[in-house]
Every structure is written in structure tokens, then in C-alpha cells.
Image (cartoon, rainbow, N blue to C red; front, side, top):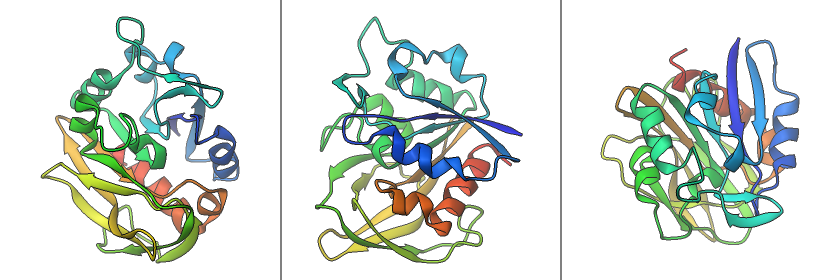
Length: 219
């Protein structure tokens, strides 16, 4: 069984959505350990206990504290540690708010270096249409789907990024919404949907999410 560390719960993205979303996922293959206040829990040694690190966290301490998660000389696992974790062979899956670290149009250099994109913005919650653009291990068995969600707009910076999905809305246009890349000895998978429970309960998103974890782990 794969051990998955899932970090979530920030000011605009309460953990309850994701906890409800993963609560009914098949537990025979993956064991999820949810961390909400990452600032005082995560360390390089702690993260290495797991097969995959999933970041659904936007960078505030938690949903009730808007101060930054990363505090120089205090935080043990920050942007540089994300980068080093993957470079040394770690498996990272970044979902929705995990792309917002650094804020709108203000990429955090070390985090952006490893994730390979940064957050531009999103229109108000709207109907979004997710389309598979390339068949790979992550899109296997996944069909196009539509849900009300925050339509994330991102700038992909990694030259080796391999997009496999895009999302379109009347309000937000069309943007890449799923890609993979390697960094050092590790793997990174990115999914931009995931603000609403409807998305997390959608069977196609659930397949994407679990397939992304398997791919990142080399399974």
C-alpha cells in the first residue's frame, strides 16, 4: 500500500472539501495522511516517510490563520525543501491551491522551479469544461467532464512540461490544467481543478487524482 502525505487547509480552501473528497476513495491501494498546519509538522525527515507528497495547500498557515506558512529560519519545509525533495527522487502531486504559493502573478522562485508553473488568477466560480488532450498513464480511463469550479489560469514555465489536459470556460478562456514533468531524480504531476466538492466527487477527476499519485510514485 502506498503511503500518501496530503497537505491542505488554507485561507480560501478549507480542508473539509478535500477530506470529504478522499474519504470514499478506495483505501486498499493508498493510505492518506492529512496534514493541515504544515508549518510546524513538515520537515524533510517527516516527508520522507511517505511514498508521495500531495500539495493542495496555498501557503497560509491554515484556514483560520492567513499568515504565511513559510517563515525564514523557522519553517523546516519550505520552497527550497520542496525543490530538494523532488530533485532527490521524491514524488510530488500538486492540486489546485497548491499552485498559488507566492500569490497571484508573484511566483515563488524555488517552488516555481520544481512545480514548473505559477498562478495567474481565476474568474468567479463558473462551469468549467475539462478536456483530455493526450493519452498517458494519468488519463487512462478518464473521459472529458464538466463541473462548477474555480477555473485556474496558470503560466507553465517548465520547458519539459508534458500537458495532457486543458480546461475551458466562457469566463476564463482555455488553459493547460494538467501536465507532468521530471525534476532531478523525481516526478511532478499537476492538476488545476479541485476547488469544489463536486469536482472531488466526479469519477473522472478521482481517476485523474489517483492515477497522478501512481505515476508520480513510479507505480
